[in-house]
Each structure stands twice: as C-alpha cells, then as structure tokens.
Length: 210
Image 1: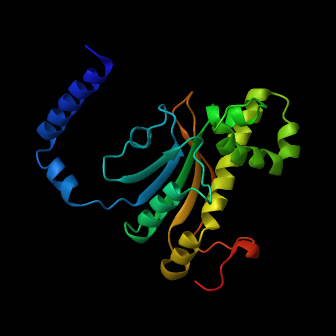
Image 2: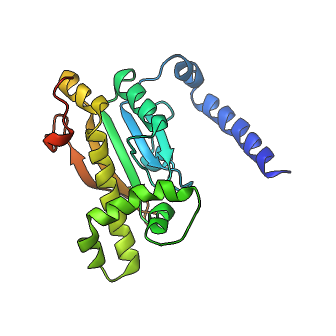
C-alpha cells in the first residue's frame, strides 16, 4: 500500500466512526461555521490546532505558516484575518508558536536558505529588536526558546497594527489577542502575551479615521 492510500483509508475509518458516534455530525458541519477563535500557528506537523486544544472541526478557524508569522505584506494571512474578524466575527485571535521551532532556529543562523531567507528575515528583525536580552542567554536552546516567545509577542503586536483589528476594536470591542507557545516535550500551552480589545499601542501605528 502506498503512503497516501493509507491516508484515504484512515479518512474513511474516521468518518465512519464519527457518524457512528454522532449521526448528524456532518450535516451540522456542512450547514454552518461559527468558530469563536482564529488560530495563527506554525506549519510544523507536530502542532495541529484541533488536536492540542481538544476541539472539534468547526470550532477553530486556522491559518498556518512557517513560524506563525503575521507579516503586513502577506495577503494570504490578511485575507484569512479579514474573513475571520469581519465575516465569522471571531472573538479571539491566537498566535501560537512552539518551542523547538525550526524556522526560529534557522533565523538565528547565517546560512543561505534561498527563498526562505526572505521569510526568515522577519524573525531576524525580532532578534534584532531584542538582541541585548537574547545575547545574554548563553545556552543556545534556551535562547531559541526565548526567541520563540518574543516572536509570538511581536506577531500579536503586528495583528494590533492592522486596520482590520483596529476597526473591529473600535466598532465591536473584539477580538481579544493572545500569544501562546506550545511545548513539544510536554504537550502544554503556555500563554506569554495578551492584548485586550482596544489596547493602546504606539500612536504611530494607530489609525485615526476608521
């Protein structure tokens, strides 16, 4: 059996088990989507949003990219954010990184990785912002873990800088923003940064005509 064929068989087994437990499950899922959460996570296959939060399909709207980045020129991410905030009307946006992130570790090197360089440059900027703190951490793994946390914090701030979030804050007092980090070694999520709806940020980034 080919590897991809096993995936198809497992899908059939999963669907049959779901219907056996809840015959109306797929009918409900097909007709409505009302998640309260937008999850911006890492593409790493070890960090699936539904599994690590023990949630069902339909409960979390998910966007994933390398190192869970919120980049102001990323139309893919911005489209997801716009849809989640203004159409699904999510109440919370979560940026979830994870310890041991390969993207974060790669950003700490000087290796040429081709097109990936352009993406990792955004994480290198985070390192530069926090260079003094990070350089004072002698243990390389601990330094990488701290950069993971700081990167999550900066990506939450990047959310707050968008007109999408600021307009929703002004008109609807939502969504709240959360920065979390998942531990591959223990399976636990650690909250590292929070921003309530309407939080004041640097006025340089605040729009006055929304």
